[in-house]
Length: 184
Ligand SMILES: [Zn+2]
Figure 1 (cartoon, rainbow, N blue to C red):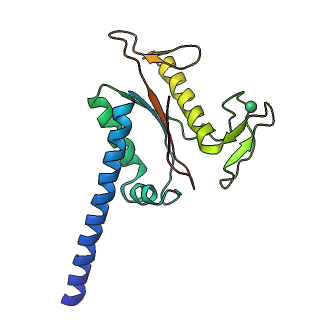
Figure 2 (tube, rainbow, N blue to C red):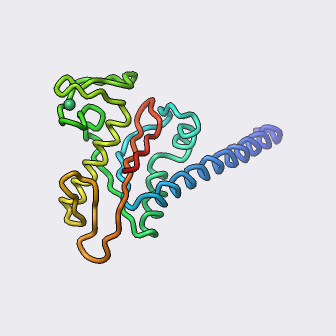
């Protein structure tokens, strides 16, 4: 490799590092915002590299990685006394009707809204998935014995200690979607 070529490679590497730091900073800020507003965050673990519609988030996620973003959420929550719940990647969050739990067979990625054939509820794809992820996260918290949910799944409390009003988010990210952060 010539000196000139080596120099060019170094410069490119340095620029890339700066861009990457900006994106990482964006993910830090986003995770901070989520953690400040929620004590329980439920995430779905997916392989999402380069497949997100929100351009800024897509760039940040594909550079830094979904795993790293979840990691930011995790340690920030831990510091705040909050909790991260990860649900199984095979959980059919998009295909379940959050109203009646009917599961449709197919939901191609370009279908952004759909109507449940069982109960007739019209769904926004990401909003519905976020509600399912939230419900599944609450169910998991309850079954692990670390918290309890009321009948409507609206509140989760630690079994011992103070009983703060908890708010939770579900973070839904999948191919060709925006990050849907739903606060309840
Ligand atoms: Zn339904």
